[in-house]
Structure formats: structure tokens, C-alpha cells
Figure 1 (cartoon, rainbow, N blue to C red):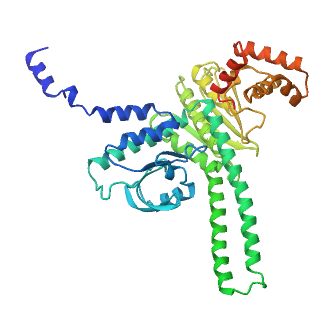
Figure 2 (cartoon, rainbow, N blue to C red; figure 1 turned 180 degrees about the horizontal axis):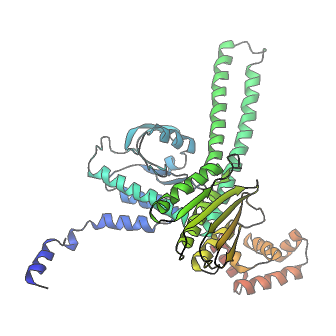
Figure 3 (cartoon, one colour; figure 1 turned 30 degrees about the horizontal axis):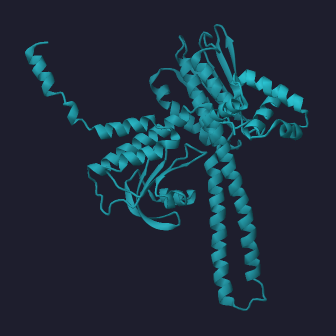
Length: 435
């Protein structure tokens, strides 16, 4: 290298000690953070530039756990989806928005930012009184956009165990909300009937309390409806989001992608099914377009009331292989939702892929990724009892079999799980999400 070139390189190279290492380390931590820790990592990254008492992320990409929180326990333990939804509705664009908002049952000054493409919301409670629009706010905005994109990517590439756990959490939240709605609705309606009774002569009090109770009923039912909306997505809307995801590919690849839309009145999809379906179709389309001589790919969705039915077909030479790594990854994702994937290859005519995803969580399937163990149904039941801490006699009584039969199944479990004790089997089951 000439002296002139060497001198030029020195002039344009930043000395390593002058690099913004704390910021770079924060970005790296966010990029590597699992979804369960992403709020804590984002708060650690933003605190040097924007103080706050708590940080809350509200994202519909994670239907099982739409809130991700860090900071003041009094706030993050009480903040509700309804409060966050109301705050997000006040934001006309990405923000930033400063003002007072109702969170955790109290009014707090907040900084709120909305991510345009995912509609995710970031809330910082009790920020500096006048943060202005300096470098600190710009860095917080940058870190939030990075985080929102990472959440979408992580959900799209989530392992099977996460999908099952998220789906189970969605179903449980919906069940609890429905129960609370029934209980409180009955209580409030009874109260209304009593207050409207002619035996009560305090008309002013009756009118006031009736009005307040009616508003509480409306608010409660609205909360229930909103929770239902969060865990379900209309099938037509889910398909339209798929079309938007694939639009850049149709624009620049030169390959025609044909979309056969589902019926508008099809059953709404659970959030995890909608997310998984889009990821599966994206993966299939990419695998097909990487083949030679493919000029057209057709994707079609339908719904039979119990399953989402997906068909993706190309016009290539029929070179797509079921054992290709990309197809095997997609198949594992399908199996995580107890679905099926079938490939029909027609040499010279292309490949036809059929995917079936059940819309209802099957109660008999454990909340964990244990498909690779090839357990029989009875072995799986015995394993679930082991995880619950039950002894052989209890397991035999609950399943209506003999203790010797239980011991037989336990031996088979040890062999299939490659473990030597009940403790190891339980630990392994826990590590795979079985509860």
C-alpha cells in the first residue's frame, strides 16, 4: 500500500476508542434478545438517553403475550390491553407523542411511539418533563423501530415450542376473559334490576348509580370484544397481509404470483395460525422461485370451518424435494400446530403443496414440542403425570391401568427419551415446554 493510500485510510478510519460502544452493545443485545426479554433489553438501551419509570410494548404480532413490560412493578403488573389500545388510538402517526394517559388505573405522563408497519406501540411512563427532539429522542426512536422489526422477525421464525405456548396462552386469556365477562355481567345486570325496582324511593341515587353501572357494563363488554379481536384475525385480512408481504417479490423477481382469495365469510383465524400460515406460504413461494424455469406460482387459501386449507403450486420442472432443508423446516412448523404438509411432485409439470392447519387447539396435545420423541398416546399421558409429580400408583389409578403397566410405559419412556431416571425425564420434558 502506498504512503498516500495509507495516509488516506488513516484519515477516514475512526479510532476504536471513539466508537459509541455502549450504543452498539445495546443494539447487539436487542438483536439477540429472546421475545421474553426484549422489553428489558430495550429499557436498558433507552435509559441512558430517556429516563422512565416503566416501559411497555403492545404488539399484536405476539397474540399469546401482546404486552412486554419492564420497570416499575406497580405499573407493569396493572396496565391493561384496553388502556394501551385507547392510547394507541390517539396516535395519528408514528409519533413521538407526549401527554397524559390512563395506565394501570392512574394518569401518567407518557412518551408513546407507534411502529407504522406493525402497529406496535411503545410507551415510556414518566419521561423527562420536556425531552424535546434532541439526540436522545432520536436514539429512542431508532431503538424502538429496530425492536419492533425484530419482534416481527422473531415471531415469523419462532420455533414450534413457542407457537404452541403462545397459542395456549391466547386460548387461556380468552377463556379467563370470557369467564370474567359472564360473572361481572350477571352481577351488574342484577344490580341494575335492583336499582330500578319501585321499592327504592331515592330516585336521584338510583339514576346516578344506574348510569354508572351501565357504563361499566359497556366498558367490560368492549374489553372482552377487544381481547377476542386480538387473538383472532379475519381470514380475508390475514390473506391480504400475505399479499402485502409478497408484493416486493412479485414486483422484482419477474415471477407471476397468483392469489386465489378465501371466501370473505370464512371463519376467523387464531393469531398463531394466521402468523404461521403467512410464514409457511412465504417459505414455500421462496423455495419454489429458487427452482429453474419457474415463471408462475399460485397460492390459495380456503377454510372448511375447522381447518385452514393452503395450496401452493408452481409451474416448474417438478424439482422440489420434500426432504430439502427449507421444506423440512416448514414441515416442523406445520406439525407444531398439529397440521399436515403434503407435496405432490409432477416431473415436468411442477410441484403441488397442500397444508392443513387446524383452527382449534387440540386438548390432547401437550403444550410443548415433543413430536420428535415418537411417543404413543398412552406414553404421553404417563409422561404428563410424571411431570405433574405423580407416583406410579397414582398414575395407575387415574388411567385405570395396573402399576405394572405404568412401569412398562415408564421403561419405554426412558428408552425413547434416552434418560436413566424419572428426574431426568421430567427435566427433559420441562426443557421442551411440557407442563
